[in-house]
Image (cartoon, rainbow, N blue to C red; front, side, top):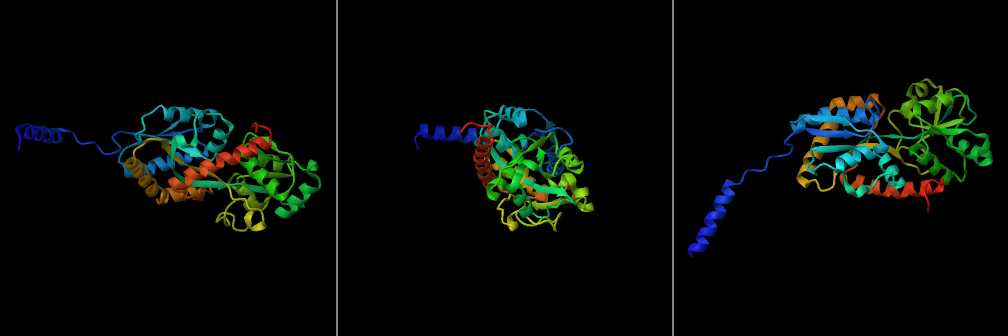
Length: 318
């Protein structure tokens, strides 16, 4: 062996021997950034998940609330951090609306959609003494003269109005929409006789539904909900609407694959815990298990659907 070759080999070996080992993820506290306020459904999800994920990651998982701009503030913060998995970000199906509206300079593809872990459906609700007994009855009344019907729910151009829009498309009718600042306010308006029908998450009126004060005409789950087994799905009534207000976790694009695997494994363990299951049951949350690939495809598809919807109600130019 030539001396120069021998020397190079010797130096290379010495370098490899001296190189410090790369520490396994996580190397410090993990921050789980929540884009809604403390006490919100998304915040409760984040805090319940964080407690359980700590057990797998062996590091504190600290929830930080960064509210504003329908997630824009939290997304901007996450995008400014290194793509190393130490900053996680909550996400919901509202991401699709925010991106579709052009309210943020980000795309779904700027993030890795790790998992969706829970979700809530939408439903059409009336009072117990309403002459409208089924979803077909509701559609027929709307077809005849929707101007006499007061229909509303949480937010303008949001999840529930989108479900209502899909029902209009399939039922071949048009109708008014009265927006409220919260789902509970829409329920109160229905109970007070200010609405003839409300499009709501069932959990926002679970007590009134269970007492029989409010009747659900249909629910947007794929199959009948374990929480409301007597309520037929919209799909089984001939209206192919399967929609969830899903919630999950995402990270900045560029996060290493092995780190993503570690985070996903921690999430898997967390959602199997009794604490997680009990909290989800108490909150009437449907269990969802969209994988990274499934959720990424779903979110991208939703953006296009939301754009069409927003164009139809005049909030987005075609």
